[in-house]
Length: 334
Image (tube, rainbow, N blue to C red; front, side):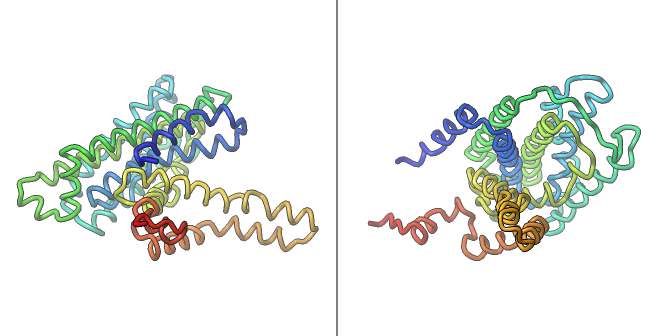
């Protein structure tokens, strides 16, 4: 089968999925998966293609979520209008940050992005009169069924991946890669590196903010601890791209599926398997083991990343030929 047909087959499968699956729990996981496709792809265009590693994407996600929530809280405007506003506000936050911090390189830029996320989180916590502080913002869900949210998330994921792919295959995309490979050489050839790094950051911030606005509409509640979480969003975005394949178009999609499934396995204790075994056998060992698994998700993420770095340094998508050759015993030369 030709490789260019794989995305089309996946798209048809995802479009028809709600017709076959009626489980709200499964649809919830799929909505989270699609949100992470957007966030992971957004992080990937900045770090994977432009070489600017960010630890602060929670800032853009949270700003997008608050843009939608505050629109309703203060102006009584539907938070769905915040879908577009969330992306624009996140981009407006990213532009001055990039102008100030892009002279920094490597670890210094990464630390600056980390400071951005934490700084905005503290501002949102302190400004109780405007953001609600730790009380957060709550809205009534628009839809009772999860199906509309699923299709909205699917549409957002498709738009983000297609638009990012179009940018990467255009002249700015080639400039992004040249900056990633050797910024000084790119500048010597006349490429305005600051301009194109800011363009990459703007695209990345916009789609991450859109994902945050959709999260606000879907979950119905946000607070600074939830949407500006360093581990839950900034670090998770990095893990999604690393596991799937940094610098590949479909790597974040694969990484999002793996990481959401991996996270849910730990959260539920292998989907409740140990709890069921504990009740069936009457043994407290399984119950204790289930509790330990619930608390060990960070350790599990660490082990997964170490395994990927050691054996699949280019991620699942980047090293797919190696996986086919060594795991499935498929030798393309034959």
